[in-house]
Amino acid sequence: MSQNDQGQRERWDAVDHYVTDHLAPADEALSAALAATEAAGLPAISVAPNQGKLLQLLARVQGARTILEIGTLGGYSTIWLARALPEDGRLISLEYDPAHADVARANLAHAGLDGIAEVRTGAALDTLPALLAGGAGPFDFVFIDADKRNNPHYVEWALRLTRPGSVIVVDNVVRGGSVVDAGSTDPSVLGTRRMIEEMGKNPRLSATAVQTVGTKGYDGFALARVLD
Image (cartoon, rainbow, N blue to C red; front, top):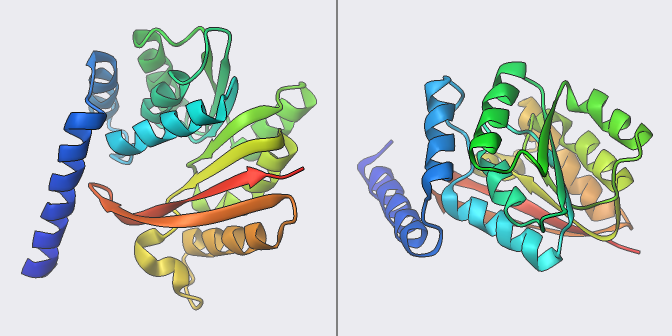
């Protein structure tokens, strides 16, 4: 990384910290969730605090009563989302790794949210059909932040488990700019490109994507609304 790039990254970090301090300050449960995630040796890939607050605000603007999350990690984003729900709301988060799921469950319990948020373990492409078969949904809000190669499949399942008016958010869709590399062999890039292209063709979705910079580097997210 060049000196100029390093200075730019420090500026991004400083802006994120400034925004977070004033608009999305940490509390004990959120700080404890990040600390527990780090202590358990989970990857340091939780959403940034201001991104977590954005998810919460989007869910609240949506008036969500039911939320589906694909990719739990340590439950940090799950806490942000669950706090957007009313007392009788429901959140289901799907996590592949049992160890990650255990950390997330403990973090949700510590935050007092285990009554409305649950973590289900297993490959999402196995647990999503089980959700449908069990009559779960329709979900008002879906947040997808799991293995990127399967993003097209996750969006397909999100459409089966939502209703007209539901909102779908997909994280990490810019991939440091590599999403425009048509010659990439990276499965995460290939999966993300296919998802974006299929979103644009799907008559049931109105979607866009936004580039972001900050403590998580250069990336972005996709936002879609399910149409009638």
